[in-house]
Length: 61
Image 1 (cartoon, rainbow, N blue to C red):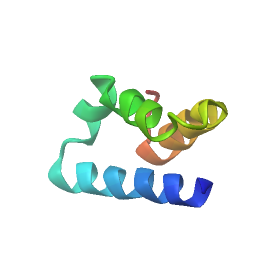
Image 2: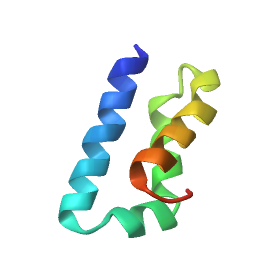
Image 3: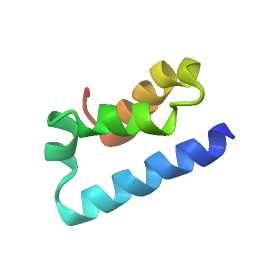
Image 4: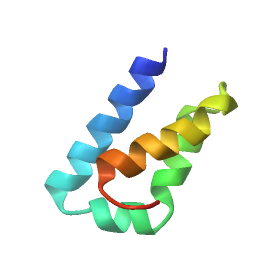
């Protein structure tokens, strides 16, 4: 299950980076909301997902 969530994060990061929207997406808080949404059934994943997002997005969220 977690690999599907990580794949979703990788996909949206690549999409936002390609469109030049990654920085705005991270700064606006939309990245946090995305992690909240995809981890809604498994809240204990949320902190790890934020770290993963930060690492792969290249900045703090």
